[in-house]
Amino acid sequence: MKKTALPSPSPAMLAHSEQLVQLITAQMQQSKPVLPFVDFMQQALYMPNLGYYSAGLDKLGKTGDFVTAPEISPLFSQCIANQCQQVLSSLENGVILEFGAGSGIMAADILNHLDQLQCLPQYYYIVEVSADLKQRQQTTLKNRLSDELFTTVQWISRLPEEPMQAVILANEVLDAMPVHKFRVEQNYIAEFYVSYQNEQFEWQILPTQNTLLQTTVDNLRLPIGYVSEVNLLLEPWIKAMANILEKGLVLLIDYGFLRSEYYHPQRNEGTLMCHYQHHAHTDPLILVGLQDITAHVDFTAVFDVAQKNNLQIAGYTQQANFLLASGLLNNLTQYETHEINAEYFQLSQQVKTLTLPSEMGELFKVMALTRELDLSLIGFS
Image 1 (tube, rainbow, N blue to C red):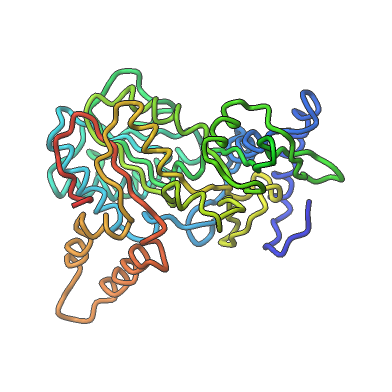
Image 2 (cartoon, rainbow, N blue to C red):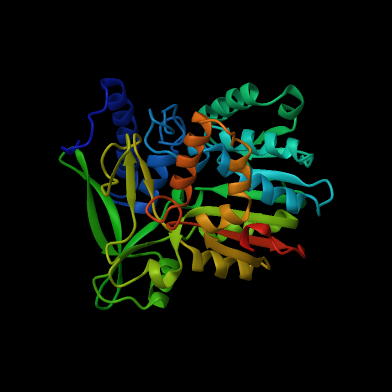
């Protein structure tokens, strides 16, 4: 494993990583000596029982690798619940479907807030492929929900086949999708591949064999030498959601940019980032299976694919704007008293983290996709 200034994994974690490395290298030997980075990222994150999201690693919170908005403050999820209430009120037997529910805290806070608002969904579906995360979510929800509310939660490993009236939630889901990493050359598009040499993974940059990647990058009209990423899994994912959404809302929350900013001339090394024990760095070929690997979201690509699949773009804004419009400050006042209140002070600090431009307020964006929904969404007012 390459030397790094990052914290050293425990012997057990190193053994876990080595097991995954052996599986990946065995697959490489059976097919080709190099692996497209998109496939490497897929296996590093999602290999059953060993990948970062599939294994029983502590990912969230102070003891994990990163902190998400629902972990920072219940106010975040209460704002999401306020937007859900507006939409659920116009649906018949409406449900909520959440992708990748993490620790389950967002689901718990949303359901408790919707219960207070007397606007519960018929079911709260959680799409979760990790058995470990599913178990953690069940523990969280059992501890935070009443027995009656807990019965509304159902775990599924794939999207339902029947059309539904729903609010579909995806908080920090798109950034974890495997991406193709490319470089623009004089007369062709090069793709980043991964090889295994001298007991470590190394980059190999070769002409791409992927015609879709070639066409997609050609259409971006980028200068020679430009390095970045493309998420080719975005289209089938949105198409799958569009196929089941009869009426309702898809709410996407993630860090990213519109295309003009995503492929800005100064962002010519791409957006690929790794997170390990609250350290951010740019080498996805180390700590295999032990670190998160992400890429920012090209929201213009989301816009294009949504339109192609007959979904309306009902809103796009910065996270700070969405939360403030969805009642963030009203939710905060619930905790205000005439005396010095430690809880209120703590929540006020959390509001700053969620909304300040230097924190999460500007980098994180919120996009709303709708179908058959004649509403002016409160989060985008």
